[in-house]
Image (cartoon, rainbow, N blue to C red; front, side):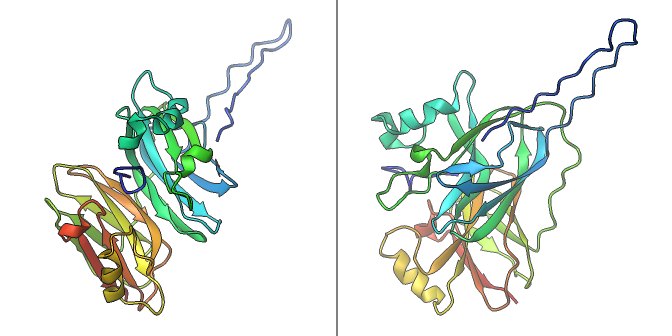
Length: 281
């Protein structure tokens, strides 16, 4: 999930299971089996913090649902930390001279839900390998300061036995990022609640999902985009995510409404034509 458009130039309760032994003269009680880390979890926003982020989750296919009950735009991006680095280093880096050029090289955005307007809900289903991660929001406030600087950051680990219970939800439509700036989207039946995002390129790409606001048209979106001021105001941000090279993920959306036009794009290549739109029906 490349956030150069946000950066210049470009929650946690640790669950501990305690087991005891029988008293003197009694048989020892066998240790309780450790509870499995979740393969699915729901996160939200309270003030300037995330809520619902578990301390650890199982490796394998994971579903994260993100609910944004606020009036502001936020994201819940999943970043993998390189060994020897921690989430505590992220904000100091971003506020340093190096941070003016973008994200730290030891933080790799691998999934999550991209910009989500207030009052909306989205989800991400993808694969996570064992390691140290952080959930963070790089959405800017009115002054252009990313949420993470105000505390919207939560570390978590991916560890334990690989989960085999999680499955990717059925997708009602497919968005395909081809080589370069090629981006296509299939028809979206009304009621669709998930889009399969596919990357056929040798490079990871971020695909954002939006819908045109009532009373606006795709022509309005194009005209606003030409002004170069970021995501056109005629669009409702509904999430999106980074898609790995030669891979796929599933992005959950609120049920598609007939007559609403959905727009997907790769903001890094939208000027080259990496944008597609389809009206649900």
